[in-house]
Length: 348
Image 1 (cartoon, rainbow, N blue to C red):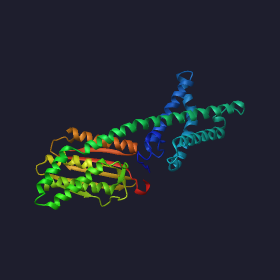
Image 2: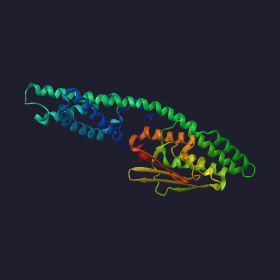
Image 3: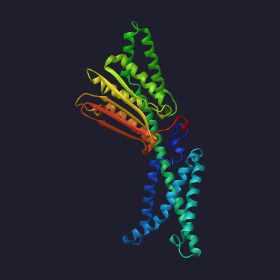
Image 4: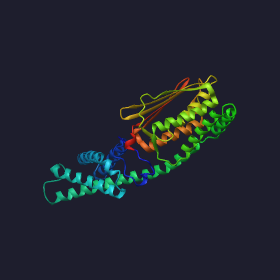
């Protein structure tokens, strides 16, 4: 299972790709075969010869690539603790060794009749495989640097989106409304608001325990209920929730915030937000559904677009193709479903 580490603990620009990540594996296979096709085009004498050259390259590329990916998948728990330069060296040794073994035991399939030219072919394939390996590692390094810059932008957007002025003003006004009649309730509300802002401004790890995120959301919803009263209710379906699960910080709260501001608040009679948190095999499922104005389009709100786009970017940065994000909207409901790899607290 993918173990996404904190960006601060393991900077993306200096890290090897996670060879247990489905997106990384798919990119290696696609890019590797793409480079093999280019090599076939360069070696071919004509269009008719392209298919023959491609098959010859594929007979060596396929076993080398699949065997290398399998060994690197097995070695991933150790590779992630190595310095970048040492990890690159280990990956090159693995790929080069598998290439030589494949050529040696492949016999005439990869080299001509045994003579001095056979060793030349082995060295040629070794150089080509290590060159392809380093090109792929360079690609992932450049991609990580780009994503690192995007991550910093996403962090800033998250902080700006979470500390919305109207939420602050509404909360303060709600507290002022009960400070004389219910001082204890006003004090609890201020404590909840302080916890929310402390969480939004904290410089902590990117993954937090799920139970902590739920507690934060309960504090947020308590503040909104102080303002909206009985118009807002929440149905927490968390009986199957794994308490030790880890997820990106402030992932659930913006979903609830959108459900309140772009759903419940627009309804005169209010409504109920349904929250489902459960583990399904090796995945963690998060579902937030809220009623909305009939005929309304929740995506038409600019604030909703920004918050949901932030979530998409963060999921892509941390889990690549292993996380999914799906929106389903109907005549009078809006539903967001997120599926991401289950990461236990001990595996953090």
